[in-house]
Image 1: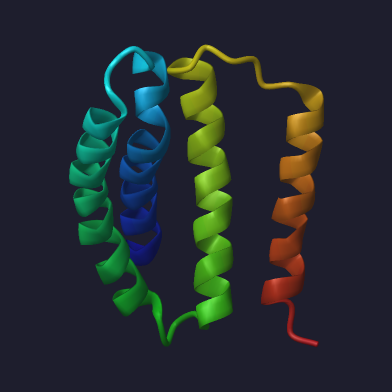
Image 2 (image 1 turned 45 degrees about the vertical axis):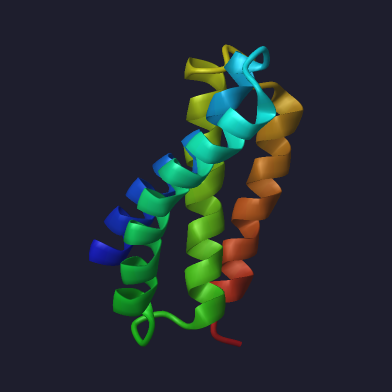
Length: 109
């Protein structure tokens, strides 16, 4: 559970670092880059421990899959709440297909 919680926190920071500056397009690009790098530092402070703790309980591919699903969920919320973008049905279908990939990654064949 610690891995999942740390990955959620990490992805919140990552999403803010990667997309938070989009509402401030009038500020210079170098400021957006610098602020994003500062925020990304905190993302790494959670991502690296999450992967260290989770590796062994999960494979590398499973950790990456978990991270990607969390990223989709965090980004979907961020885009609706912060960017004020609608969550369209085709986005949900696309996200659903990605989530279905989890089945194949975690299924023991």
